Structure formats: C-alpha cells, structure tokens
Amino acid sequence: MPRLSEVTAALDVLWPPERAEEWDAVGTVCGDPDAGVTRVLFAVDPVQEIADEAIAIGADLVVTHHPLYLRGTTTVAASHFKGRVVHTLIKHDIALHVAHTNADTADPGVSDALAGALGLRVTGPLVPENGLGRICELDHPLTLREFGARAAQRLPATAQGIRVAGDPDAIVRRVAVSGGSGDSLFDVVRAAGVDAYLTADLRHHPASEATRHATPSGKLGLVDAAHWATEWPWCEQAAAQLDEISDRHGWDLRVHVSKTVTDPWSSHHTSGAPN
Image (cartoon, rainbow, N blue to C red; front, side, top):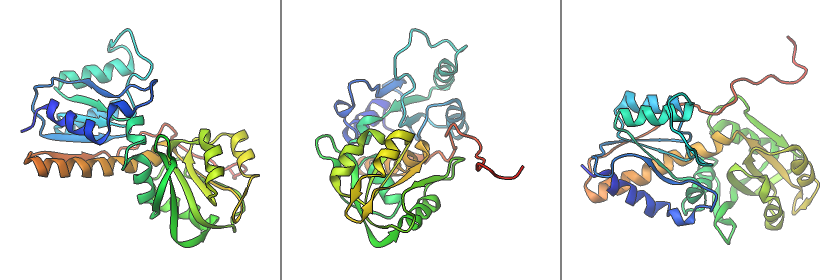
C-alpha cells in the first residue's frame, strides 16, 4: 500500500506544480502524508457531492481538476460549503489533491483528453510557449453542423449541450481545442489557421468578433460546450495514467472516475419554445 506522499509525488511528475499559473492553487489541500492509499477518486470539482461519493466508495484520496480554495481563505468552518467539504474529507480520512493549470499545460493534459474524446488527431499545442490547448485534424472532413453533433454525442451530457456559431455547412478539417474557458485564446486560434475552435464559456462579444475573421475555408466556426464537459475527459485520462504508475510500482490501487455531473447549470429551455 503506497503512502499518500508517494502517490502525490507521482501525480506531481504527471502534472508538475511549477507549471501552474502564479494565481493558481494546486497540490495537496488536506491529508496525512504518511496515510496509506488504496482507492482514488478522480473528479472535476471538489464539491460536497464528490466528497460524499468518495465516502460511499471508500476512497482515501480525491483528485480534482478545480481547486477548492482558489483565492485563499481565512476559515474552513463547516458553516460554509467549502469548509464543510474540508470537514467531511478530514473526518473520513480522505485526502484532496488538485491539478489545475498544471494539468492544462501538461503533455498529455486536459486538451489532449478533450481531443481524444472527440476522435481528433493532435498535431501540436495551440500555445507553444506554455503548451495550452491543442491543434488537431479530423480523419475525414465534416461540416460544422456535423462536428457540433459529434461533440454533443461524445462529450458528457449537460443542460447547456453544445452551441455552434458560424455557417453550419462550412467544411471543418483543422480544429483547435482548449478545455475550460477559452475565449482568451482567440488571437492564437486565428493565427493557427484552423477551421473551427471548440472550447467552453464563450462570451457574446469575443465570439461575435471571432466568427467574422477569415480562415482557410471561410470564417471561423465556434463550438461552445459546457465547462465541466470539456474537462471531464481528463479524469479518465488521469485515472489511466495513475493505473499505469500503480502497475509499474506494484501498488494495489483501485482507481475510479466520478460520473457525477457537477456542472452548475441544471436545465435548458430553447428560446421561443411553446409552454
């Protein structure tokens, strides 16, 4: 049985904490370094539902993509929902470890998992300086409509679903993807000369401006998925990576991926739909 410190050291090799952005909060949030680890749960968000799931399956360690305390805190009182998560985990001897922007820029990282879920072939990073995002190619050209439908079929279901901007009949051969919020990358997306860009949390003005720029096949198409849905494939990829490490070291680890949907949006109503 490996100790927590041994498991987190292995995770830090996969996603080096020094690759995290300065504003980020990654690493171990709670847990005894000398405690044994037999079962690990991967999830996107460190919320109460995930803590409860960890208890239910007997996990000793939860690994999440999003930090619990991103901007710091002065209290972990259980009267606050984040403090309640901390109390729940510690009370049941469950550690919490976070890999956020260091997992975004890793190779393989969050965007590799997203590309894999969509059946795309990665040709390189979208931002070569830090490794953020990926430039990909499709094995066979699709229309933007078909590519959006593929995303809806292959990414986890959410209330938002998939939004598409651009000519639905435009041909898509090269695609940029970035897990999580991605409209800050429009300049490099345009410079990459791709036909479409799939990411999450696209805002009105950046999206409106982006679709008016020319690409090799016309105008840039946008595919906007839910933030949680674009990052969840990383959980499966990360779990497989830890499985490999466990086998290599002879650890008896059981690794699980949470399928609990922690996307904050709970329902969707099409505008103008009948009551």
